[in-house]
Image (cartoon, rainbow, N blue to C red; front, side, top):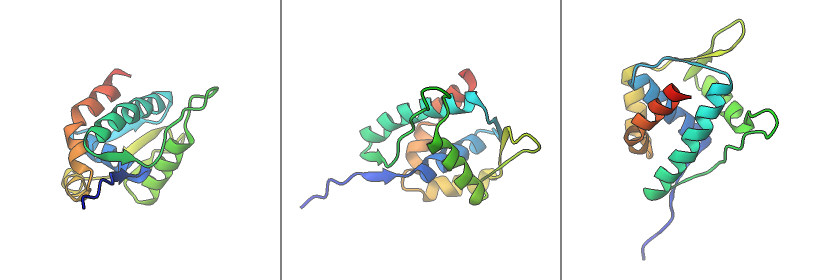
Length: 133
């Protein structure tokens, strides 16, 4: 009997994969502002389709607040990445995300993640979205 269960991608996997891809592509800082929120929502939307085509499913949703445009899911994910020491926020305004991964560690992370190849295959689009928004 064949098990048709899809492999699940969590919020932590999603943000870790994105930060690892950005590191491999030479991007170590990202402004933490409305741009970041919009870029993450766009990446989530497109990556979800990419994941479905490869028998993965997202275990969370990103829904921007209708009035403020921010997402509690993204905020929680950023806090989780900070707790895992993947990123830090630059002080005093905490308005810049600094990715703390080395390229070697980012590669190891993606190689070890079940969904790592999805992020590598989608890396050009991640970079494009962060540059055009």
